Image (cartoon, rainbow, N blue to C red):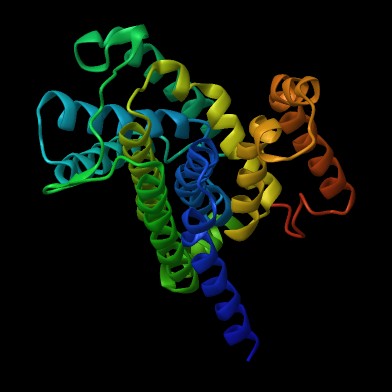
Length: 327
């Protein structure tokens, strides 16, 4: 009965999200809410990787950028159909995730975080220097709108429905994954690798597959972002975004999809508080916008301190932490 009640609430929430264009006509508000949908797809992948499998990544902005540039190049420069460019972007991002995961199999905690951080910085340079593909520091413009045959999605309402339709499918699929055998293997890996291996979990395979899946979802989000906004540049895919995404998962809690999604929605909407919340003065809105990175960082520090005092960062066995610390 409790499960049915929860499922009804989830279905009601999904229906409410898809009904937003019926009651909101403001183009700017719809665009902002579309960004929340895009970030939801990335955070779901990162929650699987970090929140369930315990693998730290500070490089998901790079996978986001890889998907965006790949789809924009395939559809805009090579004139491939949008569905094919979308699939190509997901495949390229997954391949990049697999390539990063393979040499990182022996890394944990801080060392894995540093490796993915380095990957993010390397890709930031690649996005700037690969001018023939990315447009360099000036970025890529005129990215075509998503289209299915003769049907082109170019209005804020249709783009919102596309992004949130995909996001809800991703969330539903991820929720199904964590309830089944792959999810149990991820939890076992997060708890203790020797224990997971003793239970018959192929630790290396789970690590690589989860990393590739998480990167593929970031690439999918990037492809949707590129075709929704129409312009992409290297500044969008920097370290700030990776930290924001990781902060969302840390604050959202371990082995949870709803928590990271809620935290990410708050962080994504904060810079737009002046436009979304009636009565917020221009000075207050600009102050919030300027201080968003500091607010995110401060919130993470406070939450981690509170969790550590409650014993939430250290498991009884002392083998792992909620923050993915060294074992």
